[in-house]
Image 1 (cartoon, rainbow, N blue to C red):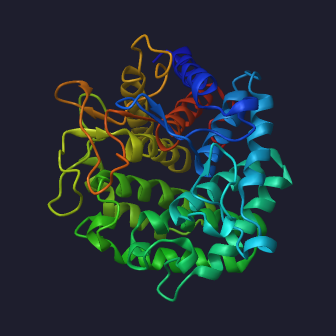
Image 2: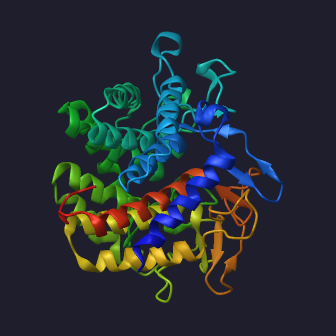
Amino acid sequence: MNEKDLTSSVGKCLVWIEKNMLTDGRGAHGVYERIRTDLCQRVELCRPDVASEYLRTLYLYRKTGRKEYDDVFENVTRWLEYAQNRKKEDKNTAFPFYLVNGKQKLPRSKTLLYQNDNGKVLLNLCYLYEKTGDTRYLTMAEKSADFWVKTQRRKGNFFKKITHLKRKDSYGPCFLLWLMAGLFSLGKITGKAEYTDAAEKAFSFVQKLIVNGRLRTSYEVSGAEAWRPVSSENYIAMLCFILSYRFTGDRVFLEAIDRISAFCDGLIEPETGAVKNGFVPGASLNENGDLCDFVYTQGYAFLAMIEMYKVLGEEKYLRRAEKAAGFLMETQIDEGDPKTDGAWRGSYDVRTKKAEGNCDQNNPLNEGGKHSVYTGWCALPIATGLTELYLLYNQEDKNELL
């Protein structure tokens, strides 16, 4: 693999974001979520989880010697501070699902709050604090974590009416895994038992969702996330489990990985290294097992492969990550349209070798599919993984964790 191809792909992605997805003032009001190509529409939602993924990508990209986004990095950090809810005003300090055009128009208490998005923000804030030493990230992380710890129920799920999520939906794995990993990370950083204890309670419940060699989906648990393929939550679990092992050193997370690894391995398409959706009756309404989901699966599966290699040092994971990287670079959009070139479409068919499929089941917003070109969840995790792979090749100490 040509190492320059990795940074070239990331550079194209960041140019696409700069030209199309940054709000005015070079990200002063955050980062837009996605483009709907079927509607010729840029969705007006700016999401904190997308912003946090963007900051992580920019941090890593700077380590390759590129500094052209330093001002954007600061702008988006300030926007995250602005976007976070405030205890004085609304008695919660979680991050809202989104702000329209990056600006708060509704009372903060009326904004949607989601556990999976907040968990991902928490995980990225902890990462940024550890790497930069900037206490703004730690302050935001603790404020958010304090809110979610107080919402945790006896079974380990995170629920309060203000979250606007049905209680039964909060038992879905994606609503537990991200917060679990983020709280383990914050517990390691701060030494505060309340964060680690909450993460352990969440993990205790997640373990019960591993049945017959795989993690049950949110759709199976409660009918939520109908569009999310079975590949998604299982690979997110792989990523969150290996991160939790890194944060705690507890081998129970390696045992959890062992319980689902055969299923996850079986989703990898041998020729390309792509992760197929998989089909399990009743696990999702996204039932085409030959499609590859880019919105909820490819990027996190790629990151899981890289983390497995960094933590365990097993070459097979590096080989998988390299093959996946080749597939991801091959499928990056290059259609002569500056509105989408440099990004990735939401769904790809390994048989036709084209962007195919749709994921709008039970949701008029169209969650993914070939017409959705996402910034967060899709382009940014992929760009992060490509940059990490480049840095792995070029770091002097191969045992250093990025």
